Image (cartoon, rainbow, N blue to C red; front, side, top):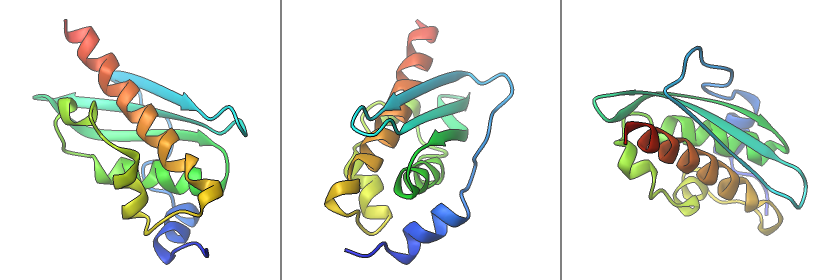
Length: 123
């Protein structure tokens, strides 16, 4: 399977990459198989993720998945982020080759972790 134009665009022009000063929460996830890692930072207002930034270390699809997730989930309720599925990220990227499906799993897991951390801090 070739990479989709959407995936290539998010890899070459990642959106929302970089640190966030004083985030409301941080979550990360790693794929042990190759060491890819993604970390998300959330800024939350009125229960919604109004800003999402990320850092990632890994293959092109992992960078693209984090970039896509940062756009796809901005504005959503934190509770919804706790239930997000990797398949939604994969579909938004117009698919991933079988040996790169972990990219969407890493992004989804890291974003869920950030959402859970935010909820835990809220009590």
